[in-house]
Amino acid sequence: MDSIPAASSAEGRPHIRRIGWLHFANDFTLDFLTPLLPAGVGVAWLGVMEGAADAIGQVLKLFTGRASDRSGVRTPFVRWGYLVNAVARPLTAIGLFASLPWWIIACRLADRVGKGIRGSATDALVADWTSGDERDRAYNQMRAMDHLGAAVGGLAAAGVAWLLAPDQLWMAVAALVVVTAWVAWLTRGLRDRPREVAAPAAPAAGGGWWPSDPSVQRPLAAIGIAAVATKLSPLLVLVQVAGLPAEGSSASWPLWQICLGWAALGVVQAVAASAAGAVSSRVGAVWLLRCGWLATTVVFVGLALTSGPWLIACGLGYGIVAGLLEGSEKVLVANRVERGSRGIAFGALALLSAIAGLAGNAVCGALLAHWSALVFLVLAAMPLLGLVILGRGRSQTSG
Image (cartoon, rainbow, N blue to C red):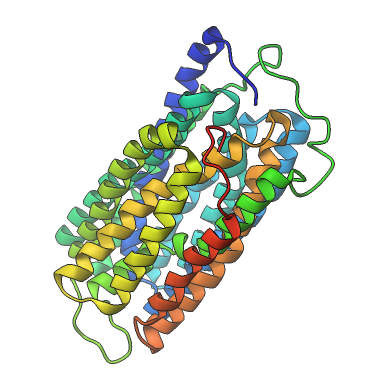
């Protein structure tokens, strides 16, 4: 697609680093808060909450991605989205303090609105400033910073859960307001890539609501089907590994140990995402997606049928394949669309992920609470179906 002169590529690196730190700060607060949520929201509601919240954010990405393409600017969407995230999360402290699950859920939904505002524009901004192998590395660097922030946030949450009584957790969540100032400072330095340096935007970008290029439609459909499993909330995987009570169950990890498990998931995802950039630039995003989807099927079978240390290994395995897949999906989309169509393409990817994630999370959460872990066997089939839809294709450098 578009190529970037060396000088422009160098000019974009500070923006990529700044976006990386925004990813870190954002996921630190998110993953500090998330493993503490079972203290205020029941297991049966976790899947519905996570699926609905993600659906709102992902659907919104389609609209904001299209608006970003039509306006030709990305940074206002990025700034406001991150600020909404930074403000919504400390407000969860009110729900924890007053024992109001509905307030916690409302804050989670508002938080995902922030993600919906910024998501497509952020992904498109990264693509605007990069090309070739640098783009592979940039997207996987973003995911590595996400998961590094998640790991640090999870460790901090573990310390808080160990030190504080459950009725005191709200104080630590309220303290997240400090991070809001850091996020505001980071967003101020972002700039759009100048148009005189970039390739012209595709004239058809603002006219439709869905990518019209067949070369991206089939991968989008395959990713959407596989996402029923691959976009399952790690919180539900942790619920299974930690043995949080389904009906009648009393054996489970204490809250601080759950937070450590969350941090461990962040570490393995960060390592996998860092490695994915080098692998994807050598063998192509399509090949990496195929291998990752097969591995996801194996992991989900393990989550359904194993116990003890093997179950923990499967939980970490889920973190590894998630880290490998996330950047590859975005590289595949970015490489197959022109600059002026990237916002809507990432919005379409987000919408498909939203539908799949809502279905997968809601079903898994409800059945884990009222049925059994065999629901993971059903989910294990979805990546295989994604492989069939993707077809044999070619593992080309553009994909």
